[in-house]
Image 1: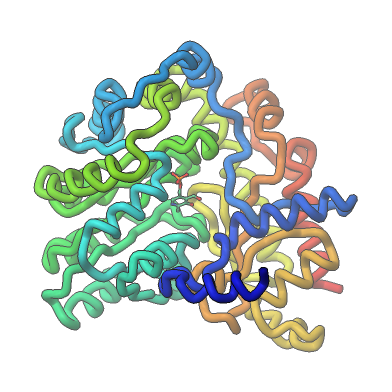
Image 2: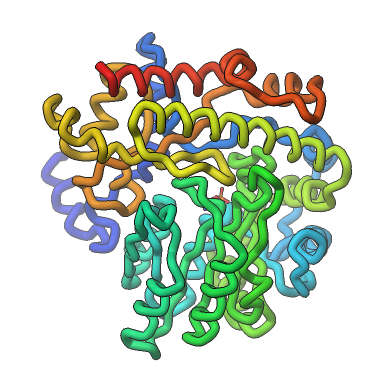
Length: 431
Ligand code: PLP
C-alpha cells in the first residue's frame, strides 16, 4: 500500500508539492487540539471576527432558507445592485450592478483573478497569508516587496515607483490591503493619492483588498479607487465586518475598463463553483442595504476593537516590544527585535521559535512574521485580538454613554481572553 502511495505521489502537480494548509487554519486547529487536551489556550492566532452576524442579517437568512435554485454565476441581481449602491453611498464610487462579481469568499475571487490575468503578483510584506500561495498554485511569479517598521509596514509610493520602473511594460497585479492584516495599519489620504498616481503612470491593476474597510476604528476608511478608479478592483465581503466568515460571501468591484477580467472570471467560475450559495446571497442583500441597526452594530464593534487594540498595543510597547498603533481590523504586528539578546539567551532566534515557545510555555497562540512573508530570522509576529465573546461585549457597550471610555477594567471584564493573553505574553518576556 505504502509503495503505491509513493508511486502516485510523483504525479502531484509541482506547484502544490510540499504545500501545507494555510498557517492561520493550522494554528486554529492546533489551539483547538490543545484545548481539548485540557490546556488553557488564548487563541490570538486565527483572524476571525469575534462578533455575531447582525440580527437583521440572520433573520434574512432564516427567511431565505428555502431558496434552492442555482443563481447567476455573477451573483444575484438584487445583491449586485445592493453592493454597487453600498459602494456609491459609502465610497463615492461610480459603479453599477454590472461592475460587481459575487463569489464564495473574496479569497476564491482573488484566486480566479490570478488565474485569468497573465502577469506578476506584487505583494508588499508583511501580508495576509494567502496571496502568494495562490500565485504559486497557479504558477505566477510573485514579487514580495518588504516594507519597513519605520513607515508603519506600509507600501511607500517610492517603493512602488522603483519596482514599476524596473521593466515598465511588465503586466502586474499590485495588492494593497488596508486596514491591514497583519498590522492593523491604514493609509493617510496623501499616501493613497500618491500611490494612485504611481499606479496610474505604470497602468498596473491594483487589487485593493478592503475587507477590513468597515472596521476602520473611526469609521473613516477611504478606498484608493477614489483616486485610481480606472485601474482598481476593490475586494470585500461579509467575512470581517459582518462576522460571517463561515458564510463564504465575497465581492469584487471592477472599473468598466476591466470588464474583460470580470467576464473571464465569471466564465472560469461557471466551470468551477457555478454560483455562490443562494440563501447567503439573499441574506447579504440585507447586510449591504445597511440602515440604523447595522450602523449601530458597526459603531459598537469599532468602539470595542479600537479600545482593545490601543490597550494591547500600549501594554506591549510598555513591555519593550515595538508595535505600531492599530487603526483598523483586529491585528497587531509586534516586533520583538529590542529583546533579541534576551531571547537569544533563551535559545530563541526566529519568529517561529518565539511563537512555538510562547504557545508551549504560556498557552498564548500567535503567528510568526514569516507566515506573512517576512524573513525567518526576523522577530516579528501577528497577534489577532479576537479571543472574547463578541456578543456579550456588544451588549455591554450598548449600555454605556457615548463618551464613556472603555478602560482597562472594562476590557479586562469583557475581553478577558485577549487581555489575559497579552498580559501572559508580557510576563513571559520579562521572565
Ligand atoms: N483578505 C484578507 C486580508 C483577509 O484577512 C482574509 C481573511 O482572513 C481574506 C482576504 C479572505 O476573506 P474571505 O475569503 O473570507 O472573503
